[in-house]
Amino acid sequence: MLTDQEKATIANTYCPLLVLYPEIEPNSHRRDHHHRGHRKSGLPPLDQDYHPRGIELVLDKTFMQISGKTKPSRSDILDVMSNNEVGKIDIVQHAGPGDVDKFWEEYASISEQEREEKYPRKAYAHILQGSGLYAEYLIIQYWLAFFFDDWANTHEMDWEMASVVVKRTTHEERPVGCAYCAHMGAFRLAWSQVERVDDNKNLAKEGNHPVVYVANGSHACYFHYHSMHVAFDSFLGPSLSRRIKRSMPWIAKTFIDYVPRFSEGDKHFPKIEVIPEPCTQEHNVGETRKHWHDEWRWLNFEGRWGTKGRFWLRPNQWFTLPWEEDGPKGPTQKGLLWEDPFDWIDYECHDTRSWLLSE
Image (cartoon, rainbow, N blue to C red; front, top):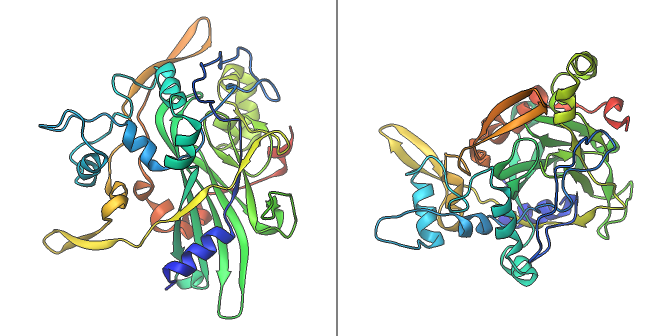
């Protein structure tokens, strides 16, 4: 079992470098961000973007009616979430996923000083030791909390994750690979093939920090610069996705992810906070479950981080497709990804292939 100090050391040693689009500027106005005719290697959907911030930002912007309190405190909101008294939270009052302007204005209203001091760019590190076949390995998951998702399926809040797998014995400590989340899919790559940087953010083959390219608006995490037809290439593979795109080209046009070039993107090491070990408490007779206390109570929340909103995908002028999207569930509600990430990497992560790098 690692000590708290050992966890902090290893989490910072392999802290990823995030390559992101420029952040929304304080007091700025939203620009026209859904360009028509976007395509691979075309214009990205956003001129600016949301960066991952401390979860306090989401909690402080959450609207919740609590009996007898006109303006509940962060602690009040955490109590309600921790006790799972609600199934979802409303991040911005009287706004839904379709009201992109409202979220833009809320985020832009935060001054630069307040962002850096009160809501710094942050990653929450979940460190898990393997067992059985993976007894000599541990995984460091870096969970990123985004205020809003503004791309093909806009929704409140966004949780994404990048991870590093390390072989750690009494004789050695050696990273062996990475796995990144991208929407409902995920990718894995051997450490020798992962782009890395040193402590000064310079690309270096011997660097300890993996580079994570964050998709514009959607915040999916990728290993390389590219633009890709995410809806099909991520899940169906190149051969089948090509056939579908030839017969239904409007689908490919609708779902494309863009990531910035290394030289052009904003590059940040997020501040690392290591998620503590939970306590256990009796839930029902003979049943216990994990439970976090104090400022970590948000990890107990089983509901959705955001309300449902309905909007329309318009692939062409004759056809519209209704879409409803809730905010995502939090890290502890991700099933295998949280509980047994080694099996998750084996069973659910795609190997990256050269076809991802064709652009």
